[in-house]
Amino acid sequence: MPFFKINSENKIIITNFKVMFTSFKRTENFTKLKRSEASLRLKLCRPTVYFTVRDPYQKAISFYKDKFQKIPMNADLSKPFKWEKPQRIFFPLMNLSVTENSAEEIKQALINTSFESFIGLLAKCYHLDEHINPQHWIFNHPKYCFLKKLGVDIENVAIFRIEDSADMAEFSSQTGFDFSQKANSTTGINKDYSMSSKMLDTLHSIYDKDFEYFGYEKRSIH
Image 1 (cartoon, rainbow, N blue to C red):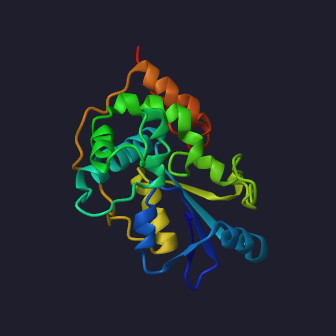
Image 2 (cartoon, rainbow, N blue to C red):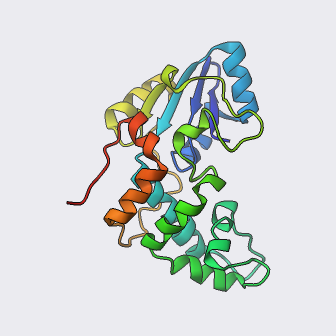
């Protein structure tokens, strides 16, 4: 789960998958928490709470590059291979099945899915996995049966945008995180990530509140 406590301090970090989660896991003074543990600490300890967020456009691109490009390209299919849940939720929309299609067929289908096609698929399944949920859902998740509400309001947390160097310098100062480190990088996956008006409208519809709450400007094509 995307929650961390800062060791020996009454501080909690909330994030989302594809928002420096892997880097946080590798940070020595951060300890990963389950949602239930984070909720209990928020209730009993009243910690200082930090929330890292990411530009919704870049978050979608990063997910596509990782799950549809990097992982399939590097998959070792010479031995049993298990596709991740964030990939499997797309399979029914792509007419794929782990029982009826070979790993090689699935690999090629993922790699050959254009970014534009991915955005169209995303509109139909973004609610099914935390990697692609709206970021603000972490505070009050509409799809959870238990612990829907985290126990802290978004208005009462310090928000840090990971693209903002000033934000991350302050975050580093407050938490001890080395924001110069990179983990799970997909910078070498180069394709066309330009977006049409239809693609932008789709992302705006899905992540509307993320743009609003976190101060990200919506693009438009004139």
